[in-house]
Image (cartoon, rainbow over all chains, first blue to last red; front, top):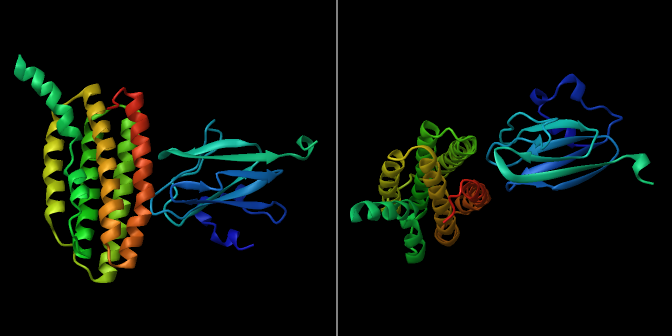
Amino acid sequence: MAVPLLLDACHSTPQQALSRETPTDTVWIRGLKFVPDTLYLSGESRVVFINQDMVVHNVKSLDSSWGSPNLPSDSSWSFLMQQSAAYQCTLHPTMRGWIIVQHADSKH
Amino acid sequence: MFTKLFAGIAMPMLLSFTPLLAVAQQKPQLSDPEIASVAVTANQVDIAYARIALQKSHDPDIRNFAQTMQRDHQSVIKQATALVQKLHVTPKDNAVSQSLRTQEAKTSKALKAKTGKAFDQAYIQNEVSYHEAVINTVENVLIPEAQNGELKGLLQQVLPVLKEHLQHAQAIAEKLGATK
């Protein structure tokens, strides 16, 4: 997978370091949108947010349980998603995204 | 009495008026150095408005918006400056850039005369009008007239930024009861 190579180490804590066992998904930030705006995960997964815009963004859950620092252009940040969440860029509040975590026991 | 009434009516018109709408309709022929000048000036103007807002407003939505305007428009200027240096283009002053600066001086004066909620409403109304006018000009004048592909590309990248700013400003205007 090429995506982990793009990770900015400054935005990763040891607990957030990528593990080989944890699947990784990517949300691109471009054109003032989260792409995809809805990401479906098969269980707990690490999600990498990569800012490709010329302006600074952040990624914060609407319930304030998690959030990134400000992400300059061409930087990234990752977080281990354990629960479904709605999130936004608080600098550009019209930018919204959703993470849907589908746990094995919720598939039946 | 009449003067007082007239002043109350005239102020919102002054703040919402922008020569850019007229410019977009007239479709002036601009060279790439002139387009670069208009692009940088238009960003500088909105930074000037944001600075006034950060000096005068205590409203958290207005302050968050103004900080975003300052940060984003500085990013655009940085990108535009890097591009013109790479292309060896010197931005050339022109009638559109001059009219933007003239209007900025008038609007800033009007904004500085207001306080409290009246300021917040006037600032955000002006942001809605200004972004509408700039989007119109970028879409209908600057992008079609830009000759250099990279300059055109930069302007195309700026459009979604401006459109998000407009939606953000409209949401705050509605919340503050400042819609037109």
